[in-house]
Image (cartoon, rainbow, N blue to C red; front, side):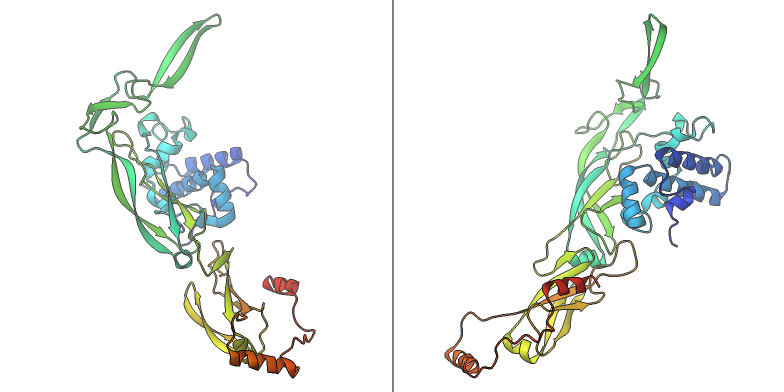
Amino acid sequence: MSKRDYYEILGISKNATAEEIKKAYRKMAIKHHPDKNPGDKVAEENFKEAAEAYEVLSDDNKKARYDQYGHAGVGGAGGFGGGGFGGGMNMEDIFSQFGDIFGGHFGGGGGAQRQQFRGTNLRVRIKLNLEEMVNGTQKTIKVKKMKLAAGTTSKTCPVCNGSGVQVKVMNTMFGQMQSQTHCSNCQGIGKVGDKIPPGANAQGLIKEDEEVTINIPAGAREGIQLNVRGKGNDAPFGGNAGDLLVVVEEEVDSAIKREGDNLHQELYVSFAEAALGAQKEIPTVGGKVKIKVDPGTQSGKILRLSGKGLPSIDSYGKGDMFVHINVWTPQKLSKDQRDFFEKQMSNGEMIAEPSGNEKTFFDKVRDLFN
């Protein structure tokens, strides 16, 4: 099932301001809020869908990637990453991240009792070759992350009574002024360690290796960030884990060069092959293919193999493969070869005789984009 457009979900235009995006989300979230629609699975899915849209459009970086690449650029369930926001985030995740947006509209919807401390995100880089970028792949990598140590227990912070904040009252010339800060005893978590195993820090976390499998779809590009939900650092004392952010890097191919969705490579042919024509086998990202070099092919001719490039990240099409023909000039000749060419030259044969129909460099460049 295809994913709906985020702007359509919130009922806004692509030019909506940050405040308009927030207001639209609040309106949709209140309409489909579980407290208002108890037991209604459709309303719950609509609520998650609106939260997913807001999670992307309220973040400038994610919004820019979504505007350029669509769902594939932001780790949605229909694109990159580990299941997307709506597919992998539960109701507690949503309340934890956006609970304050409801204000006091619902007694239990966005209150402090719903909020959970969240682990920090991890960022790693992963290299892909052209074939993996074209066809997609699955990679298993090892990451070092903070994990909740086995046997860790916690208790409510005695300083803030679990609220995570401390309220300070100061007497000034204008009367008493109140300020609120993170609790210095629990660092805003609301819990402190009760039993901490050896090797773990004060929050019950210990650094360990973990293997994570990442599904990489066809069409991944240099710089794209995949979001694997819940595979970042664990939260102190058992809250929601952070995410693993995987940045794609492209391995340089020795033979094939990429230009957007199009691919380029050079093919060297001999004098004889250029003059008489030949069948040549070349590598592509989908395997080797045979191409025909026509008789009389000139150096610099470009052959276009339609659909042999990369799949477009924001459409259903594919780029092309451009094969640049170079006629190879031998640097050393045998005596027989030299005698042959000298005879041809003395007879006035095999000399450069442009017909006037040859394409210039600019003609060839123009053809690439037509």
